[in-house]
Length: 451
Image (tube, rainbow, N blue to C red):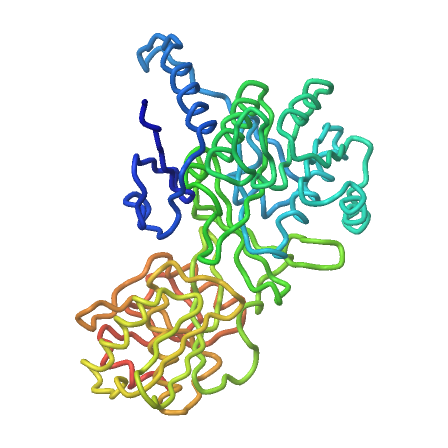
């Protein structure tokens, strides 16, 4: 009697193994490996044979390849075009993720409405909401246009049939986890389904030169739910950041085959949906007198300088000291605390330390190290800092305050918003109305911290 063939697959990354494992050796997740059914194994064998049997195209020298002349299409949103690298690329496959209620569907419906008003045929596919629900949102967003077509469907075959009936110029899939293919024997949202559907959407986008935007759910850890192969297959990956209780939303690019990933888009949630932020001055810090534990700095998001507020709370610990940070890498915080204990002899080992970056923004550069230290010292001594002073500088493990890039741009932003003083690692070359205090050692920051 033939032995039954078994195959297990990780639901997080798609790793396959002939035996069950508690922890996936590929992605490191626990309890994500499940046994595939007989139909699923046969489907995988069938697809692998068909792909291996196909003849490979002949390779050509790179010198004989013509460059693609990319003609970008404006989305009607200045901030989204900035993140995409100048606009929407025909034939591109873009994935947008974010926490529930942060504005993914609202943004894409707004963009679909903008493009439809230019005469483009738009197909909005929703597997989570009815056409009537989307119509209500479209009324609020002023996105009603006869060129915008709604399709409430979860079958991939039905979506493809609709694409064959009419020439569409833009497609929105809301969301990828709700679609399923009848040819794939697996539940919607599973690894096999998401992989198959994404491949088919990629084929449609490339062959028909239609830009496709996909909405993806995220996990509690903040990553796209489903297999990691989804992020590798698409051309662009965008994530929404920010507090859902705040009016500000930040759209950050993590992958872009057609542009840079340094830029971010900043939106404001209003009665008319997500709109481009007209001005970000004063949006990420409290104006007026600062409270003890608050310090200001300027970070660079792509080519845009943003003044933000770092908040710190240092309190006596009644047990094991806690270190927690929101918007800042926790390992970075631990390093700075160890440095303060070493260089300034602060007994922080008996204190709880909490750090928060206001506005829901995440700091990805070390130029805010000096501001984090200033906020911790302010909270520890219970003394407020000057609301006219900005702290700029990267702090090394040796206690040295190092130079940061784009110092002149940061100082110009300070001038625009009325700040007077800055504590910096080196004096600027260009003339500035900002009074700069130079410090190259973290131990000397105490001399200038409360000026």
